Amino acid sequence: MSETKEEKREATSVKVKPSIWKEAKKQAIDEGKTVSELMEDAIDTYIKEHRKRK
Image (cartoon, rainbow, N blue to C red):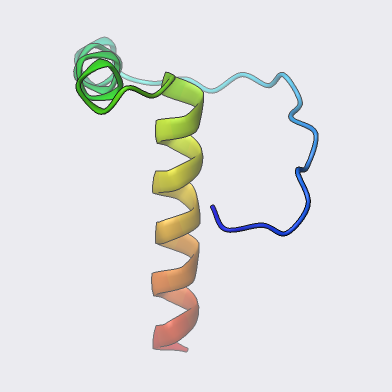
């Protein structure tokens, strides 16, 4: 996420299929990120892409 000032993170919970969570953890390790960072990037990309379509 490209931000000019760091936004404080909050703890939250989501329900995710175990198989997807396992792959997300592997991907995060491969990219040198936390799963939280990976999810933030994915959600941010999703939102930006869907805004473009409107």
